[in-house]
Image 1 (cartoon, rainbow, N blue to C red):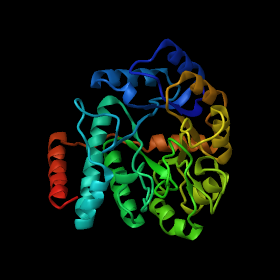
Image 2: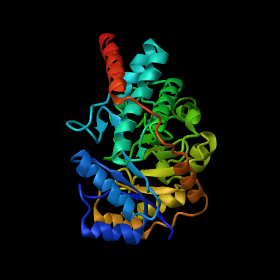
Image 3: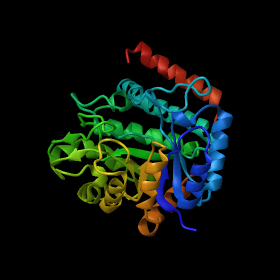
Image 4: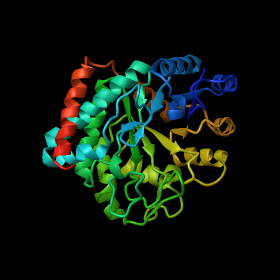
Length: 342
């Protein structure tokens, strides 16, 4: 039986009967977890097992946003706090090798947490390049303000995740750093010229074009498409993401329930696929919206299926890792950043 080209959230820490029926009937490719789904390690591992058992895809991907800093779905008392991306940037400014090592080690430690739970995909790293005056939705999640530095740290984060058996998702392609609004709330418009975007924002993603998966930005780049945000713009996806940046991996939308997008959930879903995304992501766990998404989602086939299979096949078993020693080393790096004024 073929899977469908969408990733879905669920409403709480346990599946209810309606959600089980929905998953079995509508056949999502994967799932995404949020804080509302998290209680204890045992509960999360049990939930993940049930989701995978209900799915069509063998070892179906289960995603989470576990960045560190403000965006961390797993946290105390059961899981440690991880630093925001800006800390790695501060360390990099003092010593690039130290900044990269800290980024890689933090991601490797996160991967160990996720692997224990059966979670297989982390929506990380970010390659967004913020500018003065941009909305704080990215803020200290970013690794820096220069594309080369951002790309280097993002690569280290990806490596850390992959060493721990976790697949990375590059976000928010082709860049959310200049947005002057939070796309969870309304649609941001970036009026920067094409040449400047290519030199800065897009340039941070180009060295990462080989990563297995990426998530789009709900941002209008008016110099390239004055109407549609990247998520629903065939121009941006074709000419920038697939073209200038050269990303050929599995491309998913950001959450279609976010207020940046207009129209009904069904209309948004159709627009995502019409623009060229391989998968649509729906996060809020509302079953009525989940059904709208499913009704407009095709079976995963053709090049999208090839990309999905290639992404999953790239996942490897984790290499040996001493979590206690790794955390001690990471804490020492964090202290160093603190004493240097970061």
